[in-house]
Amino acid sequence: MISQVIKILPDSVANQIAAGEVVQRPSSVVKELLENSIDAFAKNIKIVIKDAGKTLIQVIDDGIGMSEVDARLAFERHATSKISDANDLFAISTFGFRGEALASIASVAQVELITKRENDEIGTFVEIHGSKLIKQTPTVCSNGTSVTVKNLFYNIPARRRFLKSNDLELRYIVDEFIKVSLSHTEISFNLVNNQTEIYNLTTSTLKQRIIHVFGKSISSELLDINTETSIINIHGFIGKPENAKKKNKQQYFFVNNRFIKHNLLYRVILNAYENLLLPETTPSFFIYFTCNPKFIDVNIHPTKTEIKFEDERAVAQILESAIKQTLGKTSILPNIEFNLESSIQLPQMQKQKPITQPKISINPDYNPFENKTNSAWKNFFETENILNKHFEEVKTESNTLNLEYKDTHNIVQLNNRFLVLPVKSGLMIIDQHRAHTRIIYEMLIKRLEDEFSYSEKLIFPEIINVDVRIFTHLDELLPYFNRLGFCIKKINNEQISVEEIPSFFTNYSLGSILEKFFDSYFDIEKMPHKFEILDRFMLPLAQSMAIKNGQVLNNEEQQQLFDELFSTMNPQYTPDEKVIFHVIAINEIEKHF
Ligand code: ADP
Ligand code: MG
Image 1 (tube, rainbow, N blue to C red):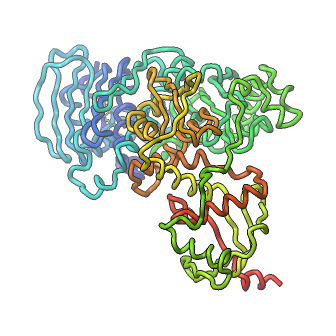
Image 2: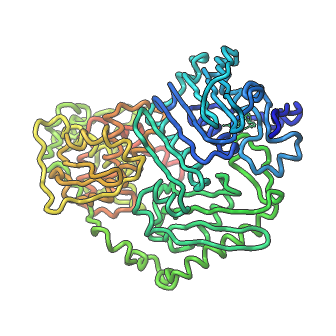
């Protein structure tokens, strides 16, 4: 083994590469360190995180390690053992090639490196705080490398403040972790956050790895895909059409074992499924391309997640026919091609509880005039329905609109989404899903405040599969569910059991609501607003229980939705500040004539 393998990159290349910042958040550190361990041929990699990486990120590997000289050189900007001129970029098959990850990380954190090569007697310890060398000494340690990154952005308070909640930062870390773990099944990975093990992935086949990451239930949803051509080989799995999901996150492309994004190929996939998918759903996929690195243009993208194939059209065609072949092979195609309806009858779907249409009757004791907290709206109704004399002015952002309510029976539903009705100042258009979200949200808040919860014991507790991400959030979520009158228990780290549900929930299909709840729970976490935990729980639950856009409502339901909306505290905005209704002013309408 050569004792010094690190070379310094010429500046021209360095500048080409250095676009974009390497370290944005804890997850970027995790990604870089993982890539380094993989490049160092590690067989086992352990990641230890504290406070979602804000306090501590440690990556321990059993890879080739570094010499004493390299241990120090590794922190020099543009120090890399992996490339010496720009041409190498195009044939690159290792992860790192910018030679600036460690330097960047060490400039914004307190970093400790412990490393030893197999044939060295003794290892090296290097400590660097904000690019400053604090200490370098020989040390006794095992083969491989451990990099500890403490107090990220400790010297840039503004960037530190910019970090998101621990939940969200941890989720970013888990996302990176999943991408890496799915591309290296020959390596075992261990991820620990605040002393809780989140993943322990032993070496396995690809399918087993996917199951370990996403839970057992995914195993019956996957179909093999496999094609070998002179240009490119494709292998992996695609999801059955009936398991397609809204906002599906289980969508992964890898090229030569590196995660990539590729919009064109994504569209090719959707195309290949054609009309097999229910509206708005997209299939899961884990697609691995293998090809000669020469056919790829890595394009020196800062995060290297976007690439171009030399012959994109050929790759697209090969992929499309591979998918169609897989879908055809499993004889899903003939069953379903006639029309969309038949896909609903596929065996997989029949296993689910029939979806009961949620009724809008949320509050049977509803009386719009009883609501003391909402006097402006109350007056509005009183004036119209009872006194029928004067009108309440309601302020909107830019102008004052008179929302005098003309005739409750004139509501019509437009496009199965909007309730449209004439009001004095024009035409009111209500988004039905948002309106119902507001109604349910306030109902839920009220329930939480209630001393008693009215629950029903389920004769057969319902077992629901949860994935690992959900599992890590259960401890904070279950108390809220319980306070609402659910009795939910953890069975193991893949399943929960629902034993009691509150009475207001009896019309809902539990499994599908919870699935939607968890989806929007994670979505809401990404929002810029700093929601309190209460809202982070309530809002997604309300959203998943609310009637959907696309649902047909009869007159009575339209009327009820309208009435209930205007008995809420804030009929104009959803809790996440989306506009619920809009009034098109008469003069606006007149302009068109
Ligand atoms: P790059 O990975 O782009 O080369 P880095 O700053 O990430 O740049 O790492 C600099 C160098 O430090 C690497 O080229 C490699 O030689 C060495 N190195 C970093 N991490 C490890 C590790 N876990 N095991 C062995 N060598 C490492
Ligand atoms: Mg690197």
